[in-house]
Length: 500
Image (cartoon, rainbow, N blue to C red; front, side, top):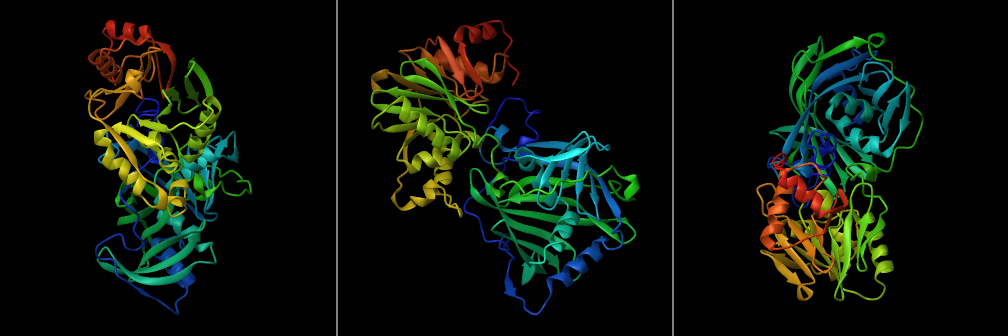
């Protein structure tokens, strides 16, 4: 939910990890007035030409579209609940779209640094050259769809586009074009009267929800020049909820000669990063290593997230299942090495931040018991019940899977007191848990001690430890290595707590 603890440092991440609801609806059925009938005998190229002409692309085909606006993102992983309303980030954005090539630049005006996107790939631009990377693709490529001009250019370059059907959307009939997007159907809604683009509708891979239904809605068009128009608001809805929005108000866009725009670097010819990178969590492919805490307690440490695994009695307890199935598979391999033999597994879900629970489906499919705050059950059940159109392990075993859930409402002991778990229940940590292994005097602080700087999270954990009567000697957390508890005590006792 916090993934590092700084709201400002996480603004970019907030666009990657987004809101979601229950099972996705078919494209084109996103609103109550959606009603579709097939269309035959019409050419997609004709409709795309009409659309390009309507917004002004044809008239200014040798120019560059320059826009300045506000990019808003829903920071689901920063918020205190896994469901909306989320914290919203608001950052200025400046972009240049070459109408000749379809390439879009954002960042600095010079060619030395920034981001460039083509129809399939995002590039990091440094020192005047462009290179591909999965991370750049994850963070930057999805926002390309917020500009309907780039969408029209991308669709116009694809000869496979077809006219699909006529649908009522937002109260009026729209002509729907279809194309393949990485094995997933994408649909572009054009107004039947004017051919203006109204919505791009598609499924996108999502690290927590599998394939999520995403709509990019273009609304409240305005004139940016003779015969040229742009929407004030381009809004991304994921499963019907706000995910991001690009606002470009009058005066924020203009068409300029190509020689007045930033230099567009030569983009290398390269295959797009795997489509699964879209909406994937950045740490989902990280491989953990181990740090011994005690004979039967280990940290599973990785660059993005650390977890704890412990053998308590005959049961292996994994404290949090982060980032996705690939990480969970790596954790499973380590558990087999560290604790050979057959052991039941319990996964302690200490809070509901999306990156913290993305590996849970793997463990449910593997027969593990999920231990979490009683308030977590509804959301975790929703994650388990959600259908993945591209099957993960849980989907493949759906018919034989049972969701075993152990709720925690107050301090609870396991294995005769060898493990104790309690809610933190501070104002900044409602619904979250911490765990204590008294034999080693080791505290797992979830994500609620993120370093040795004072924070309200830290104060909440310190108070919960006191209420539980625990006496830790060492502590670790998802973003905190093994640390002496006395360090935390000193911070609290110096009275520096209170900031988040």
